[in-house]
Image 1: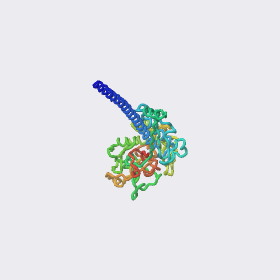
Image 2: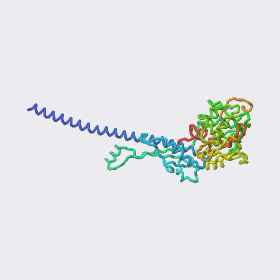
Image 3: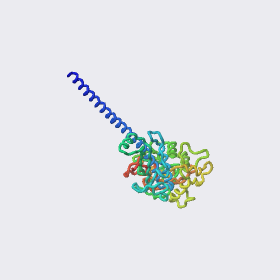
Image 4: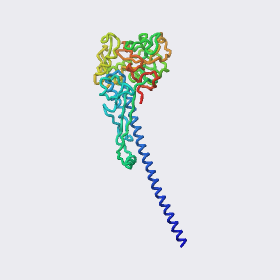
Length: 415
């Protein structure tokens, strides 16, 4: 009997232990499943936030690129640029396209901590806007465990909405893109304008030996020395990754082929068509010469007005046969092609036939004034000031360098 009792007690003890283990295992399994579920929910939210932040950053950077103060329709362009950049991104574990509502999700302000307004709400202050803010969201993000936990707490919640916001503006760059056309500093002058006055007209030619002294010169960028290379730079976006440590040499000899790509920035093309590989023309092809602008000074404000209505080339100067101009619709789909950045150098050693390398002293913003019939025709530029001055109207591609940088303005995230 004693043996039987001991056996019974041992059995009950073992059964109790097994039951305790089963309960502990069940509780631990629930806990582990909870951690797994929580990890999945947090991971899903993290991925969603990352996807949205990438879209918001791209949207803000692209929108800010249009805030140059050089186009009365800059908010329309900024919104279009921002939306085009944002919708290239996908959310929902890359399952769907980002959605950006016009006149709602992209807002603008004249100060970083100022009041941000939609495009229509900022009507009348368009040219004052300097900051672009993009807000994008993904609705109905499933978070199963978080919903269960809220139900346990006596509350009911549905799928989560995740948002991301970014603010960008134009900032001084440490590198930039520029055309191979250098402004020559005036003797005895110094930064930032090197002897020039904002609005001053400069004239020169494509044939470098005929360049007028003290105005501008065609130069060689590192790795881009032959004429076809120069044509590609002018027809495209210029040479990028340039900095103040870059040195330049003059480009010698007549460079006839550059006329085609130069003129296409005005929407003026040969009868055979636009140059191969060239970008779109500017938002306007309206040209300025002494014939329609006798003061030969300060055409920039009128240029902005012509851009607003996409005015095509006005036939100045007379290029003769073989050339035709684009129409308003082509310019309506155009871009920022006539406000360009170029280096400033000391050209004096070159004006006596020298070809020694010269350091880049600064960066100038200039407005391309007119197309030309051939390399012997005078081409005009309007000096718009130092390219790091936001009032110049210039913006280019490059790496933002913060307040201490001195290059042309480029889009950079500020928040």
